[in-house]
Image (cartoon, rainbow, N blue to C red; front, side, top):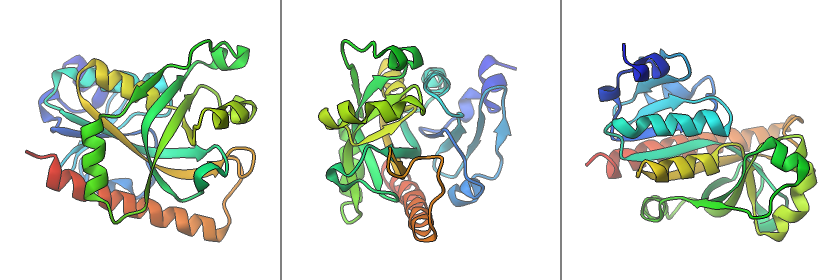
Length: 239
């Protein structure tokens, strides 16, 4: 058994041209994406839908970044990150249930760096421009906001960063996107991300539940995003 199969549960040659990587899986994810045989490796779980390979990475920049690096020796050409994010506030009216796609993400992945506020430079990594624009054009009738993201190393410390995040025009935060973009660039693969907003820092924090209306909006957005990704990949990324 190769290292790849040990870690991912599937063999390298089984990886399709497009990969969908997800830090978290909802209970209906596999059914919605048409993945029937989902195999567990030491670090990741993987399986194929008719159009793409789905990889469950777990939460955090190191795990997801490593997963992308391991795709170097596969036939994968396009990688899409699909998951949740938080809004930094009312700026640009990014609210719970919105679908957003980051054009760039600041790398604030270090817990110690956030704790000590040790950021002399805020390095950014970007989505593949052509892939992102193709996705937006294909879904021009859908309400998808193009945003700037910051990938953070702490949920606890994000509360202290809202001021500077807003100053820099950062609309959303997550825990993987900058490592995803940087790793994809390193292995020369096209990358983009699609997120659904689940919380608002300091106003509707991640540890508080949603009211029924918000939950309904969020569930509808996730369903819409799932259909959107399946359709986009099938029609545009299988050549």
